[in-house]
Length: 86
Image 1 (tube, rainbow, N blue to C red):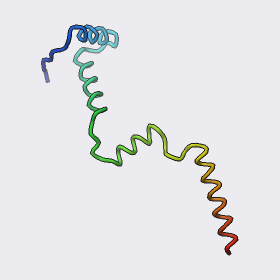
Image 2: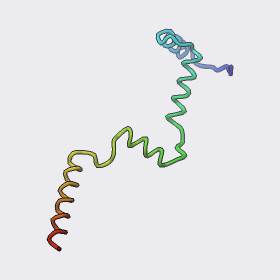
Image 3: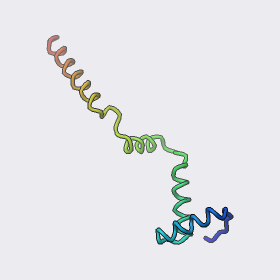
Image 4: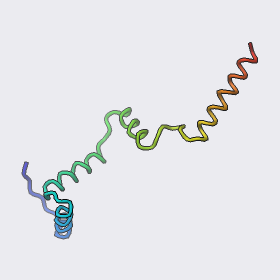
């Protein structure tokens, strides 16, 4: 779809330089930029998907070495307590 937009001259020249450097058309550059802008600001409709994206980027909570060590010690202590009760 064709459309006309108004942008400041300095932005136009920067886009022109960038499109030449990347060897893409201005239309492609604007389309890619608009897609990226919208993706970053998209309102998440599914909280589970949003949470999964955060975990994929930052890692599963509790994966740190210290947290894993605490879990191992806690499980060992629990096993020891349970065997003493028998």
